Amino acid sequence: MANWQKLEKKYMMDTFQRLPVTIVKGQGVRAWDDEGNEYLDFIGGLAVNVLGHSHPVVVKAVAKQARTIIQTSNLVYSVPQVKLAKLMIENSCMDKVFFCNSGAEACEGAVKLARRYGMIHRKGAWEVITATKSFHGRTLAMTAATGQSKFQDPYEPLPEGFVNVTYDNIAAVKAATSDKTCAVMMEPIQGEGGVNVPADDYLKKVSAWCDKKGILLILDEIQTGIGRTGTMFAYQQYGVEPDIMTLAKGLGGGVAIGAFMAKDKVSVFEHGEHGSTFGGNPLACAAGYATLNYMLKNGVVDNCRSVGAYLAKSINGLKKKSDLVVSVRGRGLLLAMELSREIAADFVLECMKEGVLLNAVTTSAVRFMPPLITTEEDVDEAMAIVKKVLARVGKK
Ligand SMILES: *Cc1c(COP(=O)(O)O)cnc(C)c1O
Image (cartoon, rainbow, N blue to C red; front, top):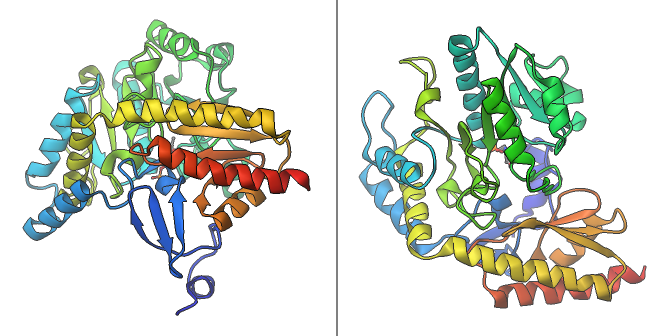
């Protein structure tokens, strides 16, 4: 068998700290490596595989679309695009959508739209307030938006127009607001920053402030959207409506797609002001439509909410058994287990060896983001392994 891990080092840029496993196959919540070992995949493609690996409904839609037409161009009309757009609009508070290919691209587009809005309606305001510990993607501008120095420092000087303020602190947003501000952009729950859940009334306060000042609220729901936190979109749990919302990750059921959506009054792009070659391609849109349609018709979001509560309870129960477990945070099936020591990477490695894939989201926190179709039995199976590893690692 080829040593894929060695070949990767030879041929690819070494940008990812990968787990030492080569995954070659997946089905539902399970995945297999090139030696035939089975895993419960609680990384879930980084919150992408909402219906698990290779869900039959997604496979069928992609195969059918591939036989029909894979790519047109955005110089012509395309049916899968319109079908997906209609479904997204009918199931959110938004009026219009633009399709792209990734999360970073969605946030870039959202900021461009906010700047256009600022230019037209707010005397040329173009600055965007974002939060510390946020994550909005890896393009140069989104690196400036992302309030984490580890992503910013290697790339200075960064593009202008972003002010990073403390998350979950309304006073900081107010203090940073000026005549130059066109928007506030944040995640309802911060994913990559460590699964940080703000106070229940924080987003409401931010939204009220934006309304008062006539600036836009952009919610980055790339990780929290598409059912992940137990409602189709996280904003629904906080009693707010964003002016612009970004999506990607779960939207294509595993196929690469991104989107930003906006209210009618904010949809100010004119012909030629934004675009994408692959954005909204028939293949990705067919996958997105099949995914969303299945979720809506089969109670997948309800399952996420109940199984998420079950998993959170199970993690919480570990506190009694081990000093290593401090707390659990998150919503739905976006959860983090905080450890008392900075051993999350080791912990995750040990869990992998025992057959469950998890992510060390910070040095001391382990992130759980399994598919939204995960069952309580799957959770029991994964948690039995987590308990076993805790007992072993906790002794050291
Ligand atoms: C993953 C993520 C992004 C970036 O998405 P990419 O597809 O990797 O560009 C942006 N914002 C949030 C909240 C994310 O979780």
